[in-house]
Amino acid sequence: MFANVVQPSIISLFSSTGSAPLQLFSQHVDASPALRSDSLIQLLDDSTSTPAPPAPGVLILLHIQSPTLRTTFIRCPPLRTAESSSALRTELGLTLPWMYIQARSLGREWAFEVGITDTAGRRGVIRCSTFQKEPALKTNHNPPLLHIPLRLPTSQILTSWRIISIDLGYFTQQFQRARSFSRRYSRDGRSTMAPLPSGAFGKVTYVKVYANCRLRRIWFNENKHSSNLPWEFELYASSSK
Image (cartoon, rainbow, N blue to C red; front, side, top):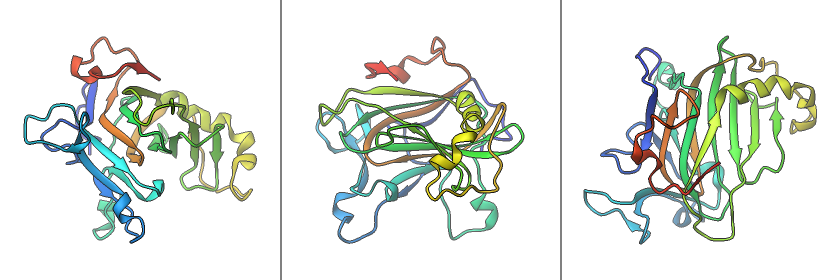
């Protein structure tokens, strides 16, 4: 999607107040009859938790919830299963090494993940979740998966908005550093033949955000510092992780 274009220092992938917030994403909701009524992805007014009003949208967010976290999510690029093999291989191709998510917890389990490659093309998945207690490398996952704990306050049903920053360069190197512990963290004690990412971060292949959260924005930056960040990117954020 972005591999063959000149990339600016900041790229906004998702904004809940944009004219077409999910234009670059596919939506996936748990289809089981028992859980269908409790699983939803919908734009809401954050202050009233009601469906989004007509434009202009003020304090509009994307609400993602489900009892089954893994089957309810949004994904960019869209996940296509009935099209050509070339469509299935569509990648983001973003080379900016810092990823930011502006979200608030619903007081339930939540996760998001980002697919990456190193500069040699070796693939990996970085997953952050509130239910993971310790960092884990799963080498029986294809591509290899690095699972990182995400700690958010849970004293209230709706916590304050937070900006979560992910240093993709740092976590790309963690695949190799955790290599000696791969058997310990593997689900079945077996490793795949897929090579682990190492060295420098290359690009982002996809982004996936699971239930349960309220989401305002996803963007990528060339550095950690936000001095060049548009003011609206940090609106409503009380703290950073």
